[in-house]
Length: 492
Ligand SMILES: Cc1cc2nc3c(=O)[nH]c(=O)nc-3n(C[C@H](O)[C@H](O)[C@H](O)COP(=O)(O)OP(=O)(O)OC[C@H]3O[C@@H](n4cnc5c(N)ncnc54)[C@H](O)[C@@H]3O)c2cc1C
Image 1 (cartoon, rainbow, N blue to C red):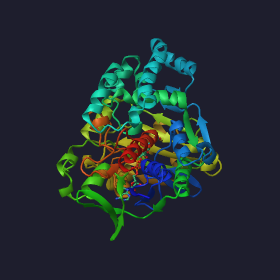
Image 2: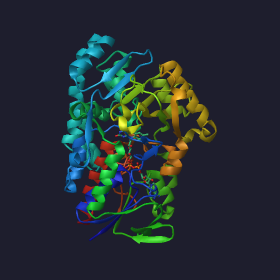
Image 3: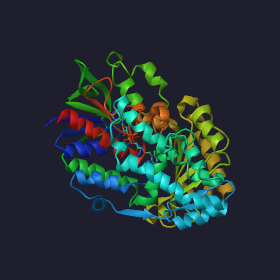
Image 4: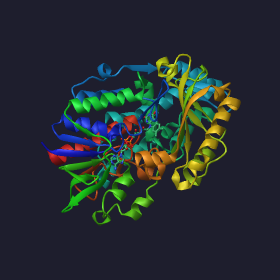
């Protein structure tokens, strides 16, 4: 049995672990933290249950494929609940749109903003389907982009679908009202992308949502992670928790093992699911890195971070759905502030996750468990988060209570935990405290994204948000399929 060591138990690491273990490899996952899941981490306090990271589940067929690999069934192992509407988007003028898979309801709401936009909705969905078919049905999303040729083959199709445009420009081809333009261009933000430069390949997400739905796993996202951990262990995989890897050992240009503390663990192949820059810069000596030198790593563009408040609230807020977006009056300038100017502006847009709207048991009776996620600039900005985090949290809560209208919010808060970009850095080894890793922009997509097989060390592989095809639950599951196919080719 060939031994594989995976560094990190994020969604990508876990999924690859399940796949390789089920294929007959002996896989050990080494995780720095005391629980598996990476960004998908749980928090429980005073009767409130929170998911600290991902909350929206899409593309369940990709998850089903994963569970099938281990001879299991997703819908038996996890109680999945389909949400409808998927989310509510509040625009700054207090108008809102309930995003759903029901075309008539979507068109009716869009028509209230602009009648012609509503007529273009189905055309947009058709264009989104074309992109989806190439990425998912024709499997470009799981094809390893290891050579320039692979990119040359893909590029003409991408151009013909206008998938090289930014998602914002793509949405502008169909819609005029700024609210409709937002609704059909913001999806890259879910995976750390800037809608004004992330390629329209990500316009497949609206189609994925429309046809596959948006789901919730009973007990929260962590019940899905727990089920993945069980599937891995039941297949025979070994889990080492509180096991931070501090070195990938290279001998004769090959990876021979990893080191945790002073212990060495040998393996035939190593996979890193940890942050991309951390994996190379901190775990591999510079003399073994011809491509990924420190200078080259510094040139990689990293995505934004997030400021999160986890709140247990002794009150119900029916104006919030399970997923709610609340937007600032600024779209492009706010995105520019976050991604490029690296400043902390006065205004913010936010996403609220309130699972107790669907499953009241996520909070004590008549209470809400909620998190507020504000996308913020990463640590390249030099914001002193330790110093300002309480003030910034207060500003967000003041906005929610006094401007947005969650009456009595601050008096009703009985649990409050804050997570800043510094926590992403210290708890996840996320470089620059980025919440999504390598930014999904055209120059860092497909062949131009970090490869799933290391360019420097032949039996070192990568999986997870920063590899092809990218971040998000479906993205990371697909990275596991991509990396698995290369490992099988190389080792079997
Ligand atoms: C706040 C937030 C909300 C999100 N919401 C959604 C959503 O609703 N839907 C969605 O689809 N996606 C969402 N995403 C994106 C999604 O969560 C991520 O893309 C995905 O979880 C990343 O998984 P990954 O495989 O890259 O691993 P990561 O989650 O990055 O995990 C990497 C793991 O490696 C470990 N590690 C690091 N260094 C070492 C080391 N040296 N030794 C051992 N272990 C190490 C870390 O501790 C961590 O456990 C969200 C992300 C965030 C941050």
